[in-house]
Amino acid sequence: MTKFATIESVAAMTQDTFYYTPRSYQTIKRWENVSSEEWQNHLWQDRNTIRDVETLSEIIKLTEYQKSEIQGTIDTLRTEGKESMRITPYYAMLMQEDVFHPKMLDGEKASRRLDPIFWQSVPTPAHLLFPSAGKEESMEEGSRSYGAVYQRYPNRVAFFISENSACATFCTHCQRTKSLDSSSFIGELDIQKGLFYIAHNVNIDEVLVTGGDALRIGKKRLGYILGELSRIPHVRSIRIATRVPVVMPMGVTEELLTVIDQSVNKYNHGPEKMVYFMTHINHYQEITEDMHAAIQRIRSHGYSVRNQTVLLKHVNAYYKTLATTFRRMFWAGVEPYYLLQCHKEKGLMHFITPIQIGKIFIKHLQGWISGIYKPMFAANVEGGGGKVLLMPSGHDTVHSGLTIEDNIYDGSAKVMTWDGRVIYDYEALGRASRKEYANAVKIMDQFIGRKDCFLPCLNIFDKRGEYIETTNRGWSLIPMLSNISKAKLLEYEVQEDETPITNPALIEEKLNTLFYDSEYVPGTTTSRPFTDKSE
Image (tube, rainbow, N blue to C red; front, side):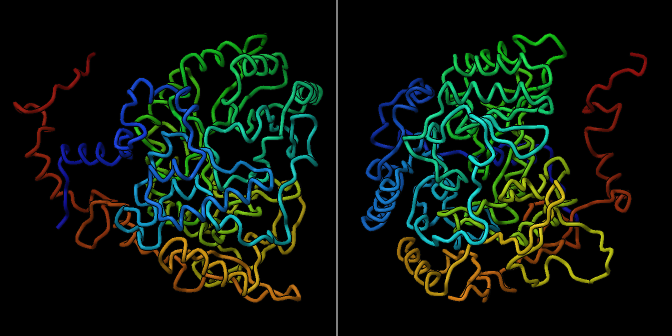
């Protein structure tokens, strides 16, 4: 029998499931006397960022062994000149108390999960494993830069106006993790050379203002940079990249937005420049009432907000997690724009999911969620290759009979870039030897406190550099998603065949019975007033 929810039950369900509700900060002894006004002050949040394991252990459960391993990781990264942990109190409270046994939605396989906020913000021994990124090493921005500007497309540039170490919270999966050092500095000369280049190159019609984080510099400096961009007639759009709405939403102040309002067209004499924000949400646990309020403040000033999500193992590399994140993100006023393959960088190998898995997720989101909820899946290719679209297609011109669910070889692939170059044997995954892999799993099993959770996907090579296999991507680990399972994971109301209604004409008789017994029938005492046709 078809199940129909009442209007009241649907409204309650939506209200209950839209926002993630974190623990109260006043349950933490350190903050039990902190007022709501202090907590909502971005300056207080900045002054009280979490940078040491002892403070972290007051917020989440950590054994002495886990504390020592995290501290050891931080110390090792510091010897490389990197400050690897900074977490705002707000973002820390999004972690569940037991980060190694988090509660998940039905269908999310909690036994193989770690808390997504913890995994994104706390350095663990996993960051010291797998030192070889493989054939394509890191994306060296300096090789394509002039001053603070980086370019790899003909019409747009990234303008780095703040250091990577300026972020309110350090993301452990950041592709620029190599640059998290206190010695990096972007000075006046870098900024001025960047502005000069943008003004000099008339092909540039869009500027990505980024860092670091574009909103993590002084308002005077931000206003100056945006004002100078407003002088350049061929710059038609400005993209402001920030994670502040996600990790410290109280930092999106009316004062800051007013500075942006007053600067982006300050010296512009033509049509208004298109200005929009780009943020970075990876998990529905980041979509809170405070985050939504920050997005609403941005939108109230006339700016749209788009998002780039990174596909991350243990964070969102699950069908239901992605679907829930994309839907809630859009409801909060943020348009899902890109789902990006995790960049291959030293210290990030454990985050990477095979491209095939991402394609499967995107394929099975098609039709099952609204098109505007569904982002483009892409990989950033090293060497200036830019983004390569990885979208699956339902159009088989070669009649191969293969689908992306087949256990196909993906140790490497041929990649065609936007500018017509071909990259042969592109490897999306990191490399390791059998010994390195086995040792890494042993280390992380001990750290996490259980087995069969840390299952990194890597290409295993022998001493001669010959490919042997890819770990953790056999038949049993390839998502197999039937229509029935998708309906269940997406929590749709279903019919007798366990699938949702997609053609109301097939149940017209049943719907008519329900309709004529409802408050929607015109002319009844319970019906809602209907606007007169003559009005």
